[in-house]
Image (cartoon, rainbow, N blue to C red; front, side):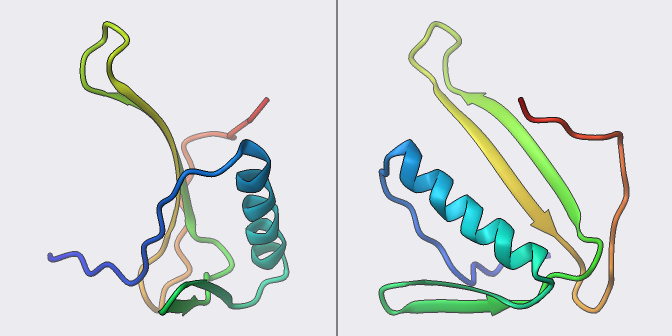
Length: 94
């Protein structure tokens, strides 16, 4: 099944700025309403269901000798028109 990118934004920011974006996103998600992402000319509005699937992934791309790229990815996904929601155990972030 082909993937259609509806919105993308990528730029270097301070940890404080990233945390602020994540807090605003969390507030919108908690408010149980639509979430609008916008940057420049792009904009997309989505309405996550009550129980979407939440995935957290930490990964290394490239060599293990310290020249690779590390990332933490947060993904919230659902099928259009469905409420979703499986569980592999409780997530904790410390």
